[in-house]
Length: 600
Picture (cartoon, rainbow, N blue to C red):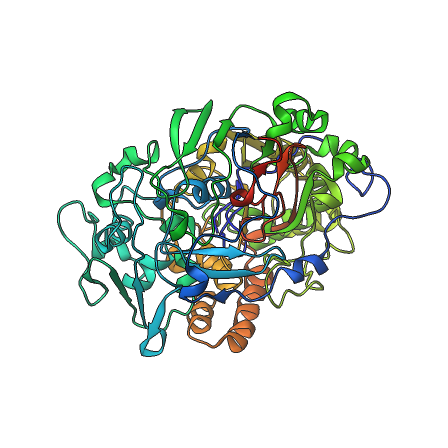
């Protein structure tokens, strides 16, 4: 998953940079300012989120979705956000805010169905099941359900699925996941269809076949057992061929899901209403309880928290979408039992890291020095204390199977606020002079701004002249994703797309994926790491786990392209009239598809 603003958990890929959990305040105690019993989520809770994802059959994939106990119909939910969505075109969606939004209006071949205990099953969404594999997992066949239509009443066919995949090869799409394309056509997949489907060319049937209107066949050169999970990502949701407006689609997509866009004022607001072409009989995941959602994209994290704590007027019908409780108000939320009842909590799949641009920060001693200097615990405190995260030892999150909580090569568990003396000694060995300039890019969110203050102070104390450069939240990843970017360091984050280290190490640290717009933000290109990735991708899970661990250790200890900072947790507020609220392991936010109003 891409960055945070977040790329997703488990099912969702999320990376963590542009700031969906904003930091606006620090607290002096280790509890993020909260008092009383510590009920924050632990790594034990994270381990409970590691359960394997099941693949559902046709019965599990048929609608309607299981009813939410006590659910009522009617009314509008108010959605609080700090800024606009990063994208609405499915092919561009790889961060968490847009992924959360996607489940309201988009549909894909598959999706994640989550039970009340957080267990995940991949089911057919517009497909009849999670997929039928053959030839040892090299070939996957999908049959489409009857009655799936877009908001204008056009029935979805295999041609629309083909179009959805092929448009990802074009330059129109630059910011979404690349798993399926690279599996079909290699890491330089764009060369296979440089104009996508827009000039009448298509991928050969030997790669992607649509023998009839209801059948789609994916053909790979090696087994791809994770395909059903990849296709469940928001980035592979369907774009109907007749509706595709290329670049313009990002501002006016056509809905297949239970809601559609009725009004959109960029940077300000958006109104979703019921999509009358959505048939619940075809959907095993979503509900359509409320009449719609009113998004306000100008409410700061602090204001969101204040309104929801007060729980007056429209706030009773409101939710935080992908933002979290304001750290400065955490005590007010946690210490009040009635307010605390209106929170959802979970361990997110994200790891915040200070990424080095290896084209500019070439000396490993310098990278190590900066890593030792980072006051990790101060960063956690600024994001909510124990309710916001925990100091990180490595680059793989506690939500991943096989997580090693003792792994800590930079001694952060013993010295959580850094080791500036060791940092200075390393800089001296490297011959770095006092006052050397270091350019730090950060997102203009409360979280990004708070991180900037902490990082700048820590690095100036060891002798750097830090040049802080602010980037707009909506374009942060686009800017640091440019190979020729002018920044030395930048805070990023990543969460697995599904429960496998392959969805972290491959997109972020594979040297063969160094490119403009790719997620290898450090530009690491190490032959040994690349070879270990290739090896792991061909192994059975048990053997692969050892290879991923080997790759992880080499990345962190011998190269250090990104300093681990902290593992992220989630705590969100909702109004007293919101029903069906719970933490979603799939999205790592409030479960958007089950919500209703207690009193419509």
